[in-house]
Length: 203
Image 1 (cartoon, rainbow, N blue to C red):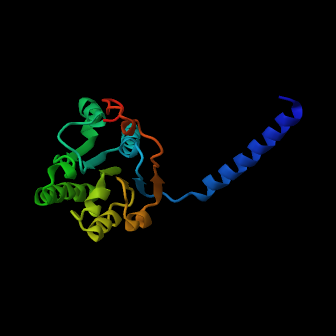
Image 2 (image 1 turned 60 degrees about the horizontal axis):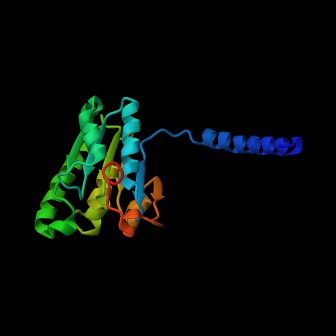
Image 3 (image 1 turned 180 degrees about the vertical axis):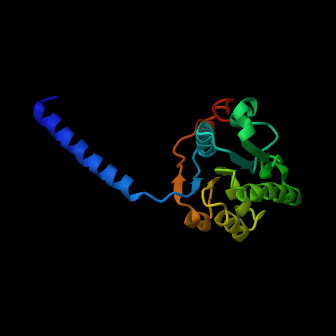
């Protein structure tokens, strides 16, 4: 690279540093936030568990409630349960499987209510720095849970607690409540091309 290009690059990096430093200076508020990870693409639960492991790495306690999950443990949960850090995580799975498999609204409603009761307890516990509500959006979409009650419980959580909500088709009320919203797009998926779901990659 010639000297002029190096000089231009250095100037751009200096301007970028000034912008980043100014943003860091503005962001001084300390509180828990609501993170919503939605969209039709792959990786919503994986992202949430990545943040969970990050919190555990900092010695924090966390809670996880998985809605629309069956009795077969995913790789994330299996790893968690095999490691000493699991004692810092309160975990509950709805354990009825996918609602489109059960096709039993009453049974799913009871399971959703039980899972939500676990979530409410976690959302009220100031010892938990992070609460993950995985696939919660389906509970609202299918009217298993009351949207206003869910929003109220999330709003009433301890000030330092962060909540991650995942799932497709998030209601506008959830989008409005969230401090951070990530939407994962579905451009291509191997499963749609006939590739079987693989342990360690898809579950």
